Length: 525
Image (cartoon, rainbow, N blue to C red):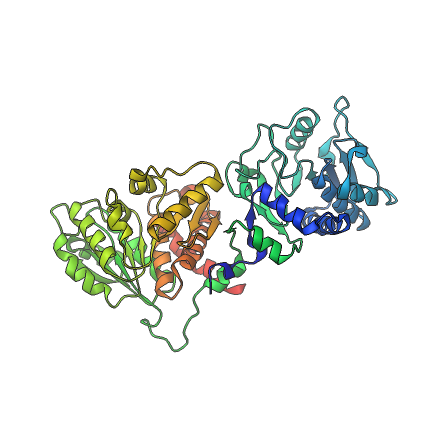
């Protein structure tokens, strides 16, 4: 399947300006069309609110003067029609409403009990602790700068309450382009993104304020969405299921993929063990693990399933340059390679890495010291023969591309575009590890991968990720597909592990126990 065919229109991620453009083109000045979209958004908010209610069915809906407030009025009307007790508040004079928002307000107040209390700056604010749920429909995605006056007071009162909050499109006070929060920003338990995900919903610190992120598919015309798409996506469960390689009922271990791993050095046998075992846990039929010869006895105790290949080593216990021909021969019958975990920065080992990547046409995952081997040697990196995936964290990125002054900007869109330029220049697939991780294909498709938690901030977890990705490639995934699914399996395994062990206590080796559970969940979709 092609890269873009993995994603539906609703998987698009937009900036605030991009979302506004889609909305304008879809509505084309027709207020009835606009109100139809608003009613669809309101229904999603209504459904999310019902799911969040406990025994006390009292809801406060706080509306601003824009379309965000209009979505709130639609949801308030639907909740009231369903028999829920709704108190609707406005932080503006309702005479200031116009367009679709004015229609939503009119339909709400025409209800039997459709009353809106206008909050003014000088009066005492409502006691929001009297409610079981607050719907924040104050500020839309286009709002910029610090909330002042009444808005600031209401946001503070909502945050000071002990009540669950459902945000409409984005928590009030969040910058939807970069994830930055103003000094006072709604802390939501759930956010319903109208139409499409917004860039800033995935980046910290704002990601902490978004809570459970849901999408409201408004049904915008596909041709408009495709034309305006920035080529940035969020993968969902359906996407993961489509990527997951099918098992072959009559297939042998060879039919399910042979992965070759060049990993490890003296004192770093654990990295080789983690990468090889995570590869097997992720489905490939066989792992061939090539390591310095002094590590073989240790690894034979640590791992029993991988086939171990001893290589000549240097005095420092790293792979020696004389092992190059053996490595090249081993790679000939492999389906995918993983190079780097625990290799060390020994110059002879770095030479092997550069030669291997320059001579083999096998798809390869390059991580850690595999990337460090190319620091200062970018012409050789650019001359790779096969398709490759690089999985740097920010430090490795700077070492690899430092001579290009390729620091990653802080602004999310600028960072993604920087990755795109490097992916194009060197014809590579990039997984920049972080929170969130960012994946960019050699063709420029970008995916935001906000999976996992702080449990993955632990030595060895990157080796597990590399093993998962090479396993998926060996089984037949494209390199970019393997990055997307691999990042999810890795992140979700960390999340599941932390529910049992806490985010403090998860070890890289613990992830192996949870990979099967994540795969089972992917198979259900």
